[in-house]
Amino acid sequence: MDKARRVFDLSTRQELSRGFGDALSTAFELALTPAIMALIGWKLDDWLGTSPAFLLFFFVFTMSYEFWKLFKRYDLRMKAEQAKVEGLRSPGEPSP
Image 1 (cartoon, one colour):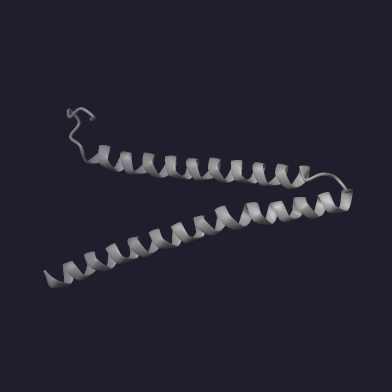
Image 2 (cartoon, one colour):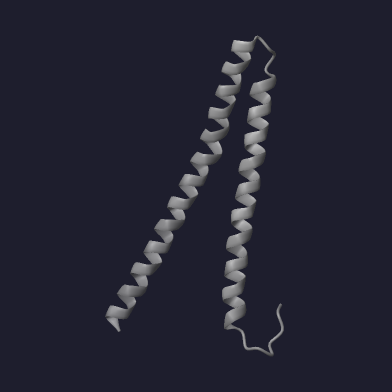
């Protein structure tokens, strides 16, 4: 019994650590990728002598892509969790 609880605690800790790691990597991705692309746009604007058009374009494009990717990743995870729950139901039981 004690060994089973330790195994459960270990798997719970691993899942929690993986969640923290995923959240941290997503936070860095949401912060750094648009900043790097905006910096590239700023340098491109400086080189071409244009207004901050490239800076704004790269920033808005990158943020749009990052939010779309975040939504798709979330949607896939939720569908996987829903499939797990539906797999636990009995065949005749209706969905909530």
